[in-house]
Length: 434
Image (tube, rainbow, N blue to C red; front, top):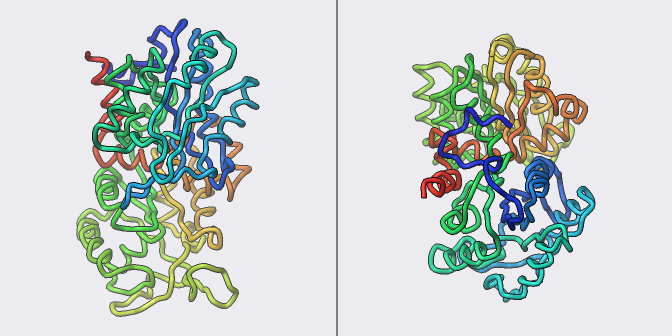
C-alpha cells in the first residue's frame, strides 16, 4: 500500500510494531439486516488489515456497530438479535478458518450494556495464548457509552483501551465521532488500517479530480443533502441529479408540482436553481417516469413524461424513475463521455419497482473507458450489484473503477473539503502528535 499521498501526520498500521500486542481494531461491518448479511463487501475489504495484524504477530479484538439500536428521542437502547454481530462472526470464522469469541455481557432492558466487565479477562488471556483466533465485541451501539455525550462515553473509551495495547481504525463508513472511533485514540497508540488509507487516497481523487469532473447525486430527501450538494456543485464541471433531489430541483426551476416534494424543499432548492442559472453545470435528464401510485409498478399507472413539456403551474404525479432514453440524449451522453473523473452517489429510481434509470446510468458510464469512476457505498453499490451483476464482477479489479465502503462518509468529507476533516481521522492525527 503506497503511503506517499497520505498526510504525513496520519499514523499508519504498516509503521506500527504489532509483535505480541493485543490490537483493538474498529471496522465498519455494518452489513447485517434482519439478522443476515446482506452483502459481505465491507467485511471483505477489511481482510487485508486483519491478515496484516496477525501476520505481524498481533492478536485482534474486533468491533463494529450494526444498525441504530438507540432511540434518538428517548435514548433507550434496544439490543435486538437481528442487530447482533453474530452473522459477521460466523462469516469471518468460515472465511478465515479460525475461532472467534463473542463476550456475553449483561444487557439491561432499554439501557443496553453498561460496560465491559472483568469476565472478558479470561478471553483476552486465551487470545494472547493463541487458544482463540480473535475476540469480536458485541455491537458497539449496544454499549451505553458509545453514543453518550458525557462521562459514560469516556468511561467506555477507557474500558476499551484497557483491553489492548494498540488501536487501529479501519472503519471508513463510521465517520461519526463516537467512543469507539474518536475518544479511544486518547488512551492508546493509534493508527489507520489499510482500508481507511485506501479510502482517503481515493477521496483525494474526488477532492482534486482530473477534469472534466462529473458527479451524479441522488437522494430521497432534499434537506439532508443541501450542504454536500452545494459543495459538490462548486467542485464539478457537470452535475447530474436523480431521485427526489432531482424532482425538487425541477419543481423549483420550472415552478411545477410533483407529488412527494414539499413546498419547504422546493424553496430550499431555489438557491441551487439560481446558482445554476449563472454557472450552467446541471445536465438535465429530459425524460422521466411518472406514476399514479408511489409504491408499486402497475401497468397503465405509469408513463414517460418530458421536462420539455413543463410549464409553470403544471402538476404531476409521483416521478419515480428516469427513462433510460434520457441517457441517449446528446447533451447527457456527451457530458458523461467527456468526463475524466466520475463520482456516483445515486440510485436514480424508486427501487425495487423502478430500476431502469440506474441500470442505464451505470451502463452509460461504463462506456467511458478513460474516466476514473468512483462509486459511493451503501445503496449506490448495492443497486449496481443487483442490476448489473455481470458488469460489477467484471470491473471489481478494474483500475478505472473504485467502490467506496461509505457513501455518507464521502459526502461528509466533500462537505467539509477534506478527508482529513473527518473527526475520527482528525483524532488519529492528533494522537500521533502526542
